[in-house]
Length: 143
Ligand SMILES: [Zn+2]
Ligand SMILES: [Zn+2]
Ligand SMILES: [Zn+2]
Image (tube, rainbow, N blue to C red; front, side):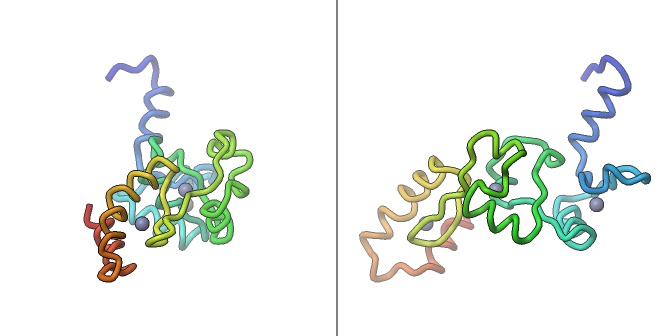
C-alpha cells in the first residue's frame, strides 16, 4: 500500500487497529488491543460503554468507526434510531434493528431479517409443534 505521507499512514493504521475510540482523546493516546473481545471488555470496564453486536456484524466499517453506547443508549439503539441522532447511523435514517417475532433475534436491517425468516422459519413453521425458541436460535448461531 502506498501512502502520501506519514499522517495518512497513521490514520489508516488507527482505523484498522483495535483501538479504543473513547481513550483517543486522552493524553496517553488511543489504547490498542490484540483482539475484539479484549477491546469490548475494556470499553465495558473502563468506560461503561459497548458497541452494538449487530452493527459489528452488519456494518461495513472499521472497528474504530463503530458507535459507542452506554447500556441504556444501546437499548434505545436496538429498539429505535433515537439514540443515534448525530452519528452516522442516525443520518442514514436508522430506525433500530428489526426483531424476529419467531425467535426474538435482532437483525441489522429488514433485508437480513427477511433472509432469516425465509431460511429459518418458513420450514420451522411447517413443523411448529417441534420448534422452540432455543432450537431456532441454535440454528441461527451455528450458521
Ligand atoms: Zn478506552
Ligand atoms: Zn446496532
Ligand atoms: Zn427468527
